[in-house]
Length: 243
Image (cartoon, rainbow, N blue to C red; front, side, top):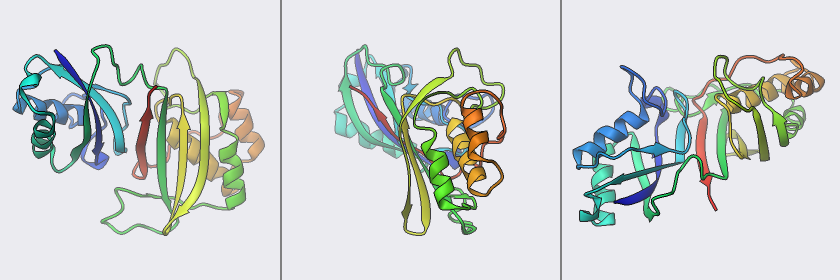
């Protein structure tokens, strides 16, 4: 039984998240439906469970099937992309050993957050987050606080259970691309809504709504000052790394 690793991209605005949800359209559900149409019925695993409205340019999945060897890899890629169009695209497809797990074998994940100070047009509003950045130096200083290993218990969605809230942020930076601001971050893992809460807290600091001292206290899990994840429209899972 051959196992495959695929790097996929998808438009998160068309789904209620990656994971299966009863009576709601999900990325995983759309994958399962398309794969079944070409005779692939094995389990599909993902590297990350993105939330409703969150996009991906480089999500990683794995799948296998007893009859998959009958397909040429390039033909299978083209066939699946025909079934997945227009909201999902398989960017690459490779054979891997049967022990590969896209989630547990991942060493890091990376996200990009696209921010606009101007209200996007109706054609771009699902792909850029409309957020006012205040003082840029304060915003960058707040983002830099997240580097390193921290207890992110106050940077996860309420009601989401995790055994351990310690995560390491390897790299985080802000830059401009055309008329947008971009926050890039890479870490060993992220809690549910963690990225949206981190960027939202940094924006709050930039606008003078919260101090850097308050942010440090929240990062030390002493007290939660900032509570609400910002809108997901501009968030993209842009990379998953393996050894």
